Image 1 (cartoon, one colour):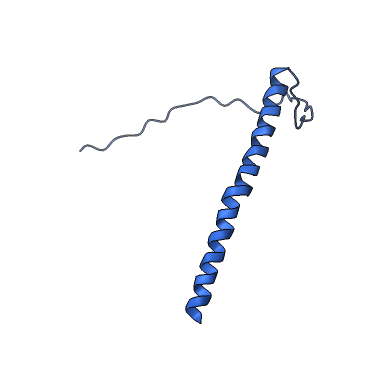
Image 2 (tube, rainbow, N blue to C red):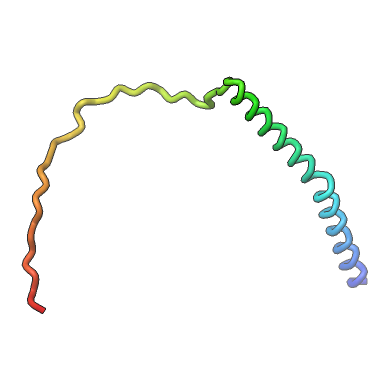
Length: 79
């Protein structure tokens, strides 16, 4: 009985996977392709839209204090 149940589960999973591959994935690929074509044609015609326009921020002239770089030499030990 357990063997029959296992075989039926394997067959069910196989047919669900087969259905998914045959019908669902081509539909998803078709939808993705149509969306990409629409975006391409919109950009080609110059109808580019921004998804998000950032707020304008004021730039500050106070960027900090300038510090001169001074190289510190270290004494190397004789080998």
